[in-house]
Length: 81
Ligand SMILES: [Zn+2]
Ligand SMILES: [Zn+2]
Image 1 (cartoon, protein in one colour):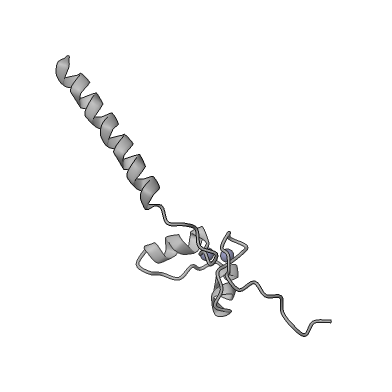
Image 2 (cartoon, rainbow, N blue to C red):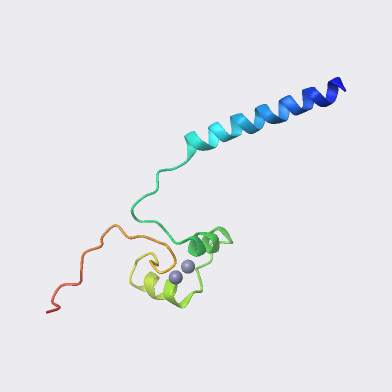
């Protein structure tokens, strides 16, 4: 049963170091963040997200806020009284 124990230790060790590595390597969430659905679409052959709300947001050069994206320039639209 020695082998099994060593394997367990190795597995746990690599899990731990991977966790540490992932934590260190995690990028800070930027203000201009894409929505998850759009990130997934981009990861899939660099496709554009097909959600109507995301398409609208992309037209305005923005990330879809309805789907959890954020935009850096959140200035309110001027000229509305
Ligand atoms: Zn989307
Ligand atoms: Zn959307």
